[in-house]
Length: 276
Image (cartoon, rainbow, N blue to C red; front, side, top):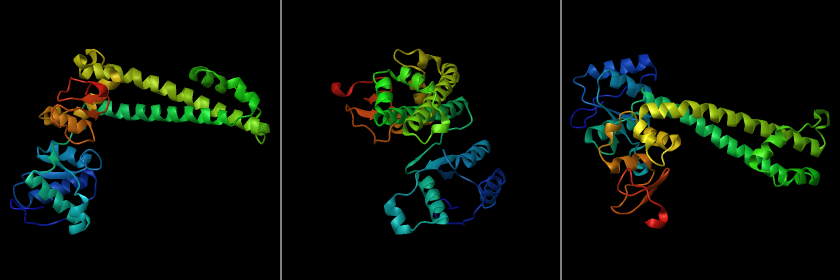
């Protein structure tokens, strides 16, 4: 806790629980009028604290963690990091308004996390199937060669090896292929179930976005999650580009890659790399 000119008034530790958050707020308010609170990681470990502070009508500022140069000079500890966060919030440097985590966009984000994980695992499973086929016995490799991905998964899932003969390489590879193929099918079912939940949710949040030409539920969902529930915190298109991309702000008139396309000075103008 610091005063209006950056002098440290005190440091204190509290448990990361609802009761601890309440004790922290009471401790701060016991020293005078509270101006704002800087929270590092407001979208992760600090989400619970940021939510309580917002419910208590406290101005919350999300601060970046100190860069390596600052940490080399000042050291690293919880009190040091807390003091640095407070001074950053006071100065307004490298700060932003945290996303709200209690609306439909947060529900959308949670479902997309599960879908993205299932898609990645399914792709890994398919690669593992093809890797096993490369080193499989000739008769099995010939049988599976040339099949489409869908046919390959279905064929492998219907293999009937004898588990009692698992010590034999040909039996073992059939058992492994069947296990992977059935996992692939299970993940495909999971992705379909999630898609049935995601599309109506995206349409309910922003039907005009989903109705735009070339924008499906996946692209629209990513845009909504990037903007957040309280999208008014993004005061310009450059701020949105910063939120949507790990790169720095784009130079005027130049394209910078972002998730799902290429950005050129507009949220609605997407262009190909060759056109830039």
